[in-house]
Length: 184
Image (cartoon, rainbow, N blue to C red; front, side, top):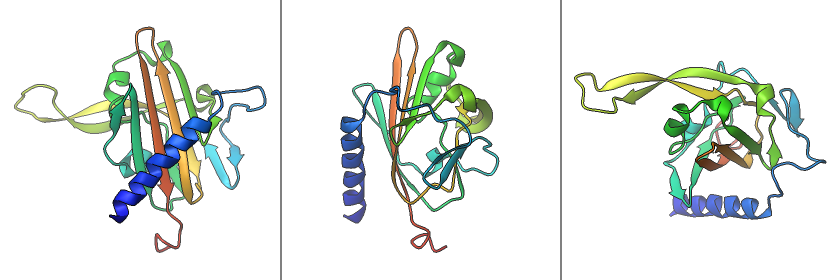
């Protein structure tokens, strides 16, 4: 019951935040670049030693061409947040990323993705068709966006990738646990 209430609260918070969001970027809301701060958190690059946000997330829910994901993250010093999420990741990996129009915002603040750049990593997967070798590894691209000392509380990540034919959207509501709750 407690998990259901927390899930419902996270979903409600994401909906409220979405409803109150201004346009992606306004003249007085500059794009965040590597090294910028949001309160005590630094937004930077360098995924080495930064666990990916998707490792702490539940299964994605898809509705009206949008993927919604909820995540519970322990208190960490680094967290990588630039990966596309389940439901969009494989479709996006097959596309030319330079031909897509990307937007990513954290807690309502848009990020300058070109300033962060991309990185490639290897992800274990299952072969897409019957094969004697069922397990494979695939190369995956992601934006090199890392949070240093993300503060405890609820955060929201909004992502959009537009191609000429399709639009991929995801909203990730993630809760960073307080260090006391994590036993630190």
